[in-house]
Length: 561
Image 1 (spheres, one colour):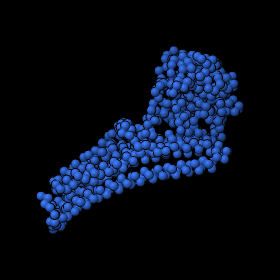
Image 2 (tube, one colour):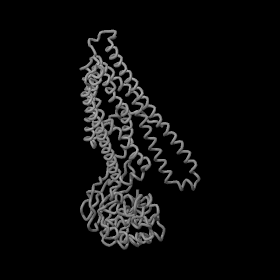
Image 3 (cartoon, rainbow, N blue to C red):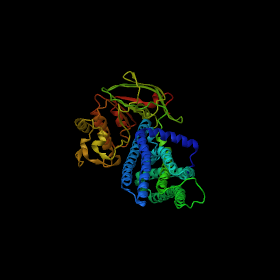
Image 4 (cartoon, rainbow, N blue to C red):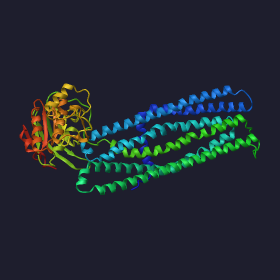
């Protein structure tokens, strides 16, 4: 399905968003613009001395000095062009890093309640392909805008000093080129937005099918999905070609009118030098003056040619911004996540009337009141859907705290526990990297002795001897190469390596067999001293090791939602 063309309101909103992002690269962008204007000023000097050198050569005069000065201008101009390109690249790199950082912070603030429903392939495409689409806009288009305003004025003024007719031709023809370009550009913007949306859907579909390959093969559905992916890829190809056709069309229009304008100036200069003008222009063009404006004319239209090439960068950036924007929106309710330090002693937690209502009115947890004692293993007991996981997510800041109060050691909780408490979910995420990196999460401040102790206490050492490179053994995506029980023990080691005094666990043994569950609980019991451990579960084995058990459905006002 095609996306409609952007309305003026859409353009203003996206323009404001792009301007806000542009602040991250403002310094390099301004430098690129200054260099861009300077290089056209230097070209005027080059054109003047080059015209003098050629005219002197034709007239049999000394041409060496003006030729050397022209070469010097050309050399300095080349340096300005290189600096302009480098500064534009730096501006784009800073903006892309800023956008990705903002997206990471926003996704962290939304937490698993949002990311669990997120189509990972589409999000990955937005944060890679769509963000990369911003490079042309911030590296070329935005720095070019001041150049478009300043450079033509310099060159028109220089042309008027030699020929008022050529100066007027510049003034008359210059506005026509952006006009035709803008007409085509509107359709290009809609086509580019459509292409990025299709790419995000294609990436999401491919990622989901890749992760479900075993299931598709089991039900003999892989051939159907192959055909579906082929059709989606063909659709994306056609939309990409549409964008390219529009890009080539606008460039062709610009080149056509620019060539006509240069040709008109060349004809005027030629007839003037031959004395064959059919009407009196009130000026006499010398060889030097004619050469000057002829050298200047193609370069006068060069900023507009560059705008034609970069104009589609604006369309791409607007389309990319509309794709990225939803990922940058912070949650409207709940407590925002702020950096915090872990607890130094095992804390107690007191919840009074705590409830959760998600956006859209869906109830996650009815008001509940309970006290979690310090230094003990407490279990939130109940069937699936009773609100156990939601309560833990409220504490971590992954779900909104809609009402009530949480007190920690008698003090009101001012920020979520993310960063202060260890977190072990039903399916702990392991990343592509070494086992050590998956335990430390690339935190170089964790001492080696803490890592070794955590490995031993969490039971990771039991299977570490079977890994070829020990802690430096590379793991595949999602912990490929380890069993479910081993992955859970790695997750426990993460919390122990940071010596977390408060650990929250959401159904940590839900996907483990009896033997793996027993080993995990054994490791947990050996590390319970000096920690407050809160576990949401419906496993009898986990309940059996608890010091306190809370029937969560019975504690909620009106029962479970």
